[in-house]
Image (cartoon, rainbow, N blue to C red):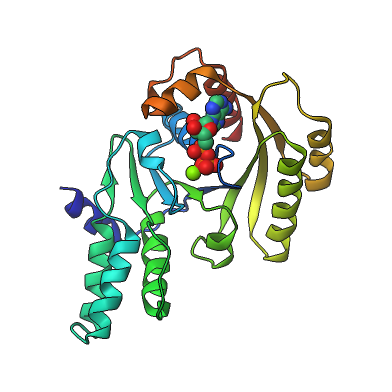
Length: 268
Ligand SMILES: Nc1ncnc2c1ncn2[C@@H]1O[C@H](COP(=O)(O)OP(=O)(O)O)[C@@H](O)[C@H]1O
Ligand SMILES: [Mg+2]
Protein backbone atom coordinates (compact mmCIF):
# COMPACT_ATOMS: atom_id res chain seq x y z
CA UNK A 1 0.00 0.00 0.00
CA UNK A 2 2.85 2.31 0.89
CA UNK A 3 4.46 1.57 -2.44
CA UNK A 4 1.31 2.25 -4.40
CA UNK A 5 0.89 5.59 -2.67
CA UNK A 6 4.51 6.54 -3.17
CA UNK A 7 4.34 5.74 -6.85
CA UNK A 8 1.27 7.88 -7.22
CA UNK A 9 3.15 10.78 -5.66
CA UNK A 10 6.06 10.36 -8.03
CA UNK A 11 3.84 10.17 -11.09
CA UNK A 12 1.77 13.14 -9.99
CA UNK A 13 1.84 15.91 -12.55
CA UNK A 14 0.26 18.51 -10.32
CA UNK A 15 2.75 20.27 -8.12
CA UNK A 16 1.81 21.95 -4.89
CA UNK A 17 3.83 24.87 -3.60
CA UNK A 18 5.00 23.26 -0.40
CA UNK A 19 5.93 25.22 2.71
CA UNK A 20 9.43 24.01 3.59
CA UNK A 21 10.91 24.14 7.07
CA UNK A 22 14.60 23.18 7.48
CA UNK A 23 16.18 22.59 10.88
CA UNK A 24 19.93 23.08 11.35
CA UNK A 25 22.45 23.24 14.19
CA UNK A 26 25.28 21.31 15.82
CA UNK A 27 24.82 17.68 16.84
CA UNK A 28 23.14 17.06 20.18
CA UNK A 29 21.50 20.48 20.59
CA UNK A 30 17.95 19.24 20.07
CA UNK A 31 17.37 19.48 16.28
CA UNK A 32 15.55 16.17 16.00
CA UNK A 33 13.41 16.85 19.07
CA UNK A 34 12.49 20.29 17.71
CA UNK A 35 11.78 18.81 14.25
CA UNK A 36 9.44 16.30 15.88
CA UNK A 37 7.71 19.02 17.89
CA UNK A 38 7.28 21.27 14.84
CA UNK A 39 5.71 18.37 12.89
CA UNK A 40 3.52 17.49 15.85
CA UNK A 41 2.23 21.05 16.18
CA UNK A 42 1.71 21.45 12.42
CA UNK A 43 -0.51 18.37 12.49
CA UNK A 44 -2.31 19.45 15.66
CA UNK A 45 -3.20 22.73 13.94
CA UNK A 46 -4.55 21.01 10.83
CA UNK A 47 -1.51 21.62 8.60
CA UNK A 48 -1.22 18.29 6.81
CA UNK A 49 -0.11 16.09 5.18
CA UNK A 50 3.51 16.67 6.16
CA UNK A 51 6.54 15.07 4.52
CA UNK A 52 9.18 14.55 7.22
CA UNK A 53 12.69 14.20 5.77
CA UNK A 54 15.40 12.76 7.97
CA UNK A 55 18.49 14.15 6.26
CA UNK A 56 20.86 13.45 9.14
CA UNK A 57 22.53 10.02 8.89
CA UNK A 58 23.05 10.01 12.66
CA UNK A 59 19.50 10.91 13.40
CA UNK A 60 16.53 9.06 14.76
CA UNK A 61 13.65 11.23 13.66
CA UNK A 62 11.59 8.06 13.20
CA UNK A 63 11.63 7.27 16.92
CA UNK A 64 10.75 10.87 17.86
CA UNK A 65 7.83 10.54 15.41
CA UNK A 66 6.99 7.00 16.52
CA UNK A 67 7.42 5.26 13.14
CA UNK A 68 9.65 2.48 11.80
CA UNK A 69 12.04 2.87 8.88
CA UNK A 70 12.58 -0.18 6.66
CA UNK A 71 14.99 1.28 4.12
CA UNK A 72 16.84 4.50 3.45
CA UNK A 73 17.56 6.49 0.31
CA UNK A 74 21.26 6.03 1.04
CA UNK A 75 20.98 2.26 0.83
CA UNK A 76 19.03 2.42 -2.43
CA UNK A 77 21.56 4.87 -3.83
CA UNK A 78 24.40 2.55 -2.93
CA UNK A 79 22.62 -0.42 -4.55
CA UNK A 80 21.95 1.62 -7.67
CA UNK A 81 25.58 2.61 -7.88
CA UNK A 82 26.74 -1.00 -7.60
CA UNK A 83 24.26 -2.18 -10.22
CA UNK A 84 25.22 0.67 -12.54
CA UNK A 85 28.91 -0.19 -12.23
CA UNK A 86 28.08 -3.77 -13.31
CA UNK A 87 26.22 -2.32 -16.28
CA UNK A 88 23.10 -4.28 -15.35
CA UNK A 89 20.47 -1.62 -15.93
CA UNK A 90 20.86 1.40 -18.14
CA UNK A 91 19.08 4.50 -19.40
CA UNK A 92 15.45 5.25 -18.67
CA UNK A 93 14.92 1.86 -17.02
CA UNK A 94 17.73 2.67 -14.58
CA UNK A 95 16.22 6.02 -13.69
CA UNK A 96 12.73 4.55 -13.25
CA UNK A 97 13.99 1.68 -11.13
CA UNK A 98 15.88 4.05 -8.85
CA UNK A 99 12.93 6.40 -8.52
CA UNK A 100 10.62 3.54 -7.70
CA UNK A 101 12.97 2.10 -5.11
CA UNK A 102 13.42 5.49 -3.45
CA UNK A 103 9.64 5.89 -3.35
CA UNK A 104 9.46 2.57 -1.53
CA UNK A 105 11.49 4.09 1.34
CA UNK A 106 8.55 6.32 2.13
CA UNK A 107 7.02 5.45 5.51
CA UNK A 108 3.34 6.18 5.74
CA UNK A 109 1.82 7.34 9.02
CA UNK A 110 -1.35 9.14 9.98
CA UNK A 111 -1.29 12.65 8.46
CA UNK A 112 2.40 12.48 7.64
CA UNK A 113 4.93 10.44 5.68
CA UNK A 114 8.61 10.12 6.41
CA UNK A 115 11.68 9.41 4.33
CA UNK A 116 15.20 8.84 5.68
CA UNK A 117 18.35 9.68 3.73
CA UNK A 118 20.56 7.23 5.60
CA UNK A 119 24.33 6.98 5.39
CA UNK A 120 26.39 9.47 3.41
CA UNK A 121 28.18 8.29 0.30
CA UNK A 122 31.28 6.11 0.30
CA UNK A 123 34.07 6.21 -2.30
CA UNK A 124 33.25 6.34 -6.02
CA UNK A 125 31.12 8.55 -8.21
CA UNK A 126 27.66 9.38 -7.02
CA UNK A 127 26.88 12.20 -9.44
CA UNK A 128 24.20 10.29 -11.28
CA UNK A 129 22.58 8.85 -8.16
CA UNK A 130 22.75 12.24 -6.42
CA UNK A 131 21.01 13.96 -9.29
CA UNK A 132 18.24 11.39 -9.26
CA UNK A 133 18.00 11.80 -5.50
CA UNK A 134 17.60 15.55 -5.86
CA UNK A 135 14.99 15.00 -8.53
CA UNK A 136 12.99 12.52 -6.47
CA UNK A 137 13.11 14.65 -3.33
CA UNK A 138 11.86 17.59 -5.34
CA UNK A 139 9.07 15.55 -6.92
CA UNK A 140 8.13 14.06 -3.56
CA UNK A 141 8.17 17.44 -1.84
CA UNK A 142 5.90 18.91 -4.46
CA UNK A 143 3.19 16.43 -3.46
CA UNK A 144 2.99 17.70 0.12
CA UNK A 145 1.86 21.13 1.33
CA UNK A 146 4.34 20.93 4.23
CA UNK A 147 7.89 19.56 4.17
CA UNK A 148 10.02 19.49 7.33
CA UNK A 149 13.69 18.52 7.07
CA UNK A 150 15.92 17.47 9.95
CA UNK A 151 19.41 18.26 8.65
CA UNK A 152 22.90 17.09 9.51
CA UNK A 153 25.16 19.48 11.43
CA UNK A 154 26.28 21.73 8.54
CA UNK A 155 24.34 23.28 5.73
CA UNK A 156 25.39 20.71 3.10
CA UNK A 157 21.91 19.62 2.09
CA UNK A 158 20.88 23.21 1.59
CA UNK A 159 24.05 24.27 -0.20
CA UNK A 160 24.00 21.24 -2.52
CA UNK A 161 20.54 22.41 -3.47
CA UNK A 162 19.06 19.00 -2.67
CA UNK A 163 16.67 21.23 -0.79
CA UNK A 164 15.95 24.18 -3.07
CA UNK A 165 13.96 26.79 -1.28
CA UNK A 166 13.34 27.17 2.40
CA UNK A 167 10.41 29.13 3.79
CA UNK A 168 11.45 28.85 7.41
CA UNK A 169 15.03 28.21 8.42
CA UNK A 170 15.36 27.01 12.00
CA UNK A 171 18.69 27.22 13.80
CA UNK A 172 19.11 25.41 17.11
CA UNK A 173 21.80 25.99 19.74
CA UNK A 174 22.48 25.22 23.36
CA UNK A 175 22.65 28.23 25.68
CA UNK A 176 26.47 28.19 26.00
CA UNK A 177 28.68 30.95 24.65
CA UNK A 178 30.02 28.44 22.11
CA UNK A 179 26.49 27.48 21.14
CA UNK A 180 25.60 31.09 20.37
CA UNK A 181 28.85 31.50 18.43
CA UNK A 182 27.85 28.47 16.31
CA UNK A 183 24.62 30.24 15.38
CA UNK A 184 26.61 33.29 14.25
CA UNK A 185 28.77 31.04 12.08
CA UNK A 186 25.79 29.16 10.64
CA UNK A 187 24.06 32.42 9.82
CA UNK A 188 27.13 33.77 8.06
CA UNK A 189 27.50 30.49 6.17
CA UNK A 190 23.87 30.56 5.06
CA UNK A 191 24.49 33.95 3.45
CA UNK A 192 27.80 32.98 1.92
CA UNK A 193 26.17 29.89 0.39
CA UNK A 194 23.20 31.86 -0.82
CA UNK A 195 20.75 29.68 1.04
CA UNK A 196 17.38 31.04 0.06
CA UNK A 197 15.16 31.42 3.14
CA UNK A 198 12.23 33.68 3.93
CA UNK A 199 12.02 33.46 7.72
CA UNK A 200 14.49 32.61 10.44
CA UNK A 201 13.78 31.25 13.90
CA UNK A 202 16.59 30.68 16.38
CA UNK A 203 15.97 28.24 19.22
CA UNK A 204 18.10 28.40 22.34
CA UNK A 205 17.33 24.96 23.70
CA UNK A 206 17.60 23.31 27.11
CA UNK A 207 17.87 26.58 29.03
CA UNK A 208 18.24 25.90 32.75
CA UNK A 209 18.59 29.43 34.11
CA UNK A 210 15.06 30.55 33.25
CA UNK A 211 16.22 33.39 30.99
CA UNK A 212 17.76 33.93 27.57
CA UNK A 213 21.54 34.15 27.98
CA UNK A 214 22.94 37.73 27.56
CA UNK A 215 24.97 36.67 24.55
CA UNK A 216 21.85 35.33 22.77
CA UNK A 217 19.95 38.58 23.27
CA UNK A 218 22.14 40.28 20.63
CA UNK A 219 21.36 37.62 18.04
CA UNK A 220 18.05 39.15 17.01
CA UNK A 221 19.69 42.31 15.70
CA UNK A 222 22.72 40.54 14.31
CA UNK A 223 20.76 37.96 12.32
CA UNK A 224 17.46 39.81 11.82
CA UNK A 225 15.79 36.62 13.01
CA UNK A 226 12.01 36.70 13.21
CA UNK A 227 12.13 35.03 16.61
CA UNK A 228 14.67 34.03 19.23
CA UNK A 229 12.88 31.29 21.13
CA UNK A 230 14.04 29.99 24.46
CA UNK A 231 13.06 26.41 25.26
CA UNK A 232 13.55 25.21 28.82
CA UNK A 233 15.29 21.98 29.73
CA UNK A 234 12.24 19.81 30.15
CA UNK A 235 12.06 16.82 32.45
CA UNK A 236 9.29 15.05 30.53
CA UNK A 237 11.21 15.34 27.23
CA UNK A 238 14.33 13.92 28.90
CA UNK A 239 12.35 10.95 30.27
CA UNK A 240 10.66 10.40 26.87
CA UNK A 241 14.02 10.35 25.16
CA UNK A 242 15.35 7.74 27.60
CA UNK A 243 12.34 5.53 26.86
CA UNK A 244 12.33 6.23 23.11
CA UNK A 245 8.75 7.54 23.21
CA UNK A 246 7.37 9.78 20.44
CA UNK A 247 6.77 13.50 21.09
CA UNK A 248 3.12 13.07 20.13
CA UNK A 249 2.61 11.33 23.49
CA UNK A 250 3.92 14.27 25.56
CA UNK A 251 1.32 15.62 27.98
CA UNK A 252 -1.00 18.36 26.74
CA UNK A 253 0.31 20.74 29.38
CA UNK A 254 4.00 20.33 28.48
CA UNK A 255 5.50 23.82 28.46
CA UNK A 256 7.76 23.13 25.44
CA UNK A 257 4.82 21.78 23.44
CA UNK A 258 2.75 24.85 24.41
CA UNK A 259 5.54 27.21 23.31
CA UNK A 260 5.94 25.45 19.98
CA UNK A 261 2.19 25.54 19.49
CA UNK A 262 2.12 29.31 20.01
CA UNK A 263 4.80 29.94 17.38
CA UNK A 264 3.33 27.52 14.82
CA UNK A 265 -0.08 29.19 15.21
CA UNK A 266 1.56 32.53 14.55
CA UNK A 267 3.35 31.22 11.43
CA UNK A 268 0.21 30.73 9.30
N1 LIG B 1 14.13 21.00 25.70
C1 LIG B 1 14.64 19.82 26.05
N2 LIG B 1 14.56 19.38 27.32
C2 LIG B 1 15.09 18.20 27.71
N3 LIG B 1 15.76 17.38 26.89
C3 LIG B 1 15.90 17.76 25.60
C4 LIG B 1 15.34 18.99 25.11
N4 LIG B 1 15.65 19.10 23.79
C5 LIG B 1 16.35 17.98 23.48
N5 LIG B 1 16.51 17.20 24.55
C6 LIG B 1 17.24 15.92 24.61
O1 LIG B 1 18.59 16.15 24.19
C7 LIG B 1 19.09 15.03 23.48
C8 LIG B 1 19.59 15.44 22.11
O2 LIG B 1 18.49 15.92 21.37
P1 LIG B 1 18.33 15.64 19.80
O3 LIG B 1 17.03 16.23 19.42
O4 LIG B 1 18.57 14.22 19.48
O5 LIG B 1 19.54 16.53 19.24
P2 LIG B 1 20.17 16.61 17.78
O6 LIG B 1 19.14 16.15 16.82
O7 LIG B 1 20.52 18.06 17.59
O8 LIG B 1 21.40 15.75 17.79
C9 LIG B 1 17.95 14.03 23.40
O9 LIG B 1 18.11 13.08 24.43
C10 LIG B 1 16.70 14.88 23.65
O10 LIG B 1 15.65 14.17 24.23
MG1 LIG C 1 19.35 14.64 15.32
